[in-house]
Image (tube, rainbow, N blue to C red; front, side):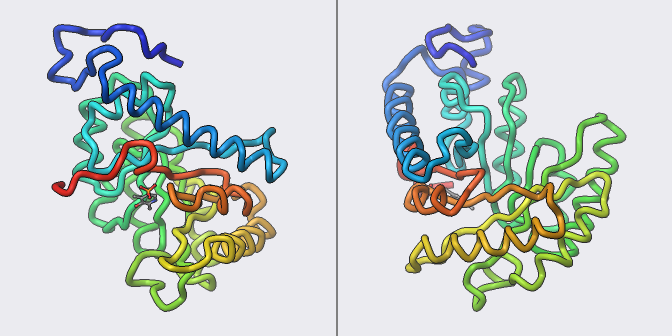
Length: 260
Ligand SMILES: *Cc1c(COP(=O)(O)O)cnc(C)c1O
């Protein structure tokens, strides 16, 4: 863990690489918001009797500048999430001196697979066979080039059957066929499932449904234990339902700037 009070590593390149001034007002704001979110996570884990295995916190940094991600790294954050390839690859390039894991959490077009595998540790939004095929091909090339480990893949499930397919997310019946495809690729690793609670629905009910889908997946693929669920508004419900990965944006970084 990096000490937030340490000065920039390369002060001469500070501006260019988005180096934050030490403990500036924004860093303090993020530190306080992060502490509040960590308190909520700890309380929810306590209440659910799972303090021994807290979920992995992924800070969703979309729309926020690279300098904020550098601030987060200084505060001990190791995992960040982005939802647009161009924005993510630019930030990952600027921050390549940091030891961060990049999680892609947005809808992904197959033609972006080659780009995304250059920086992504995990894709949380694998929702169709064509995308899995493209990721497998891109990853095979990337691993030949770099020798890195397989790409972690989460199957995104739509918890709102009506929107399955067009708003992102496979239907529940597509999960096992996709799992079979992912687990057949040596360059991809089937991590588990991911979902977003549908707008206006009860998150406890939505995440219980996801937990059921995860249980059916694990019956066939015991190593696919991950459940990526829970955002700023519903992290407690996600923890109650067994989430292993939380994706929190606005409660840590504030509301997203209106302009991209
Ligand atoms: C933006 C986003 C998040 C974070 O949402 P907040 O409400 O800002 O915490 C989580 N997951 C996905 C898929 C997102 O697009």
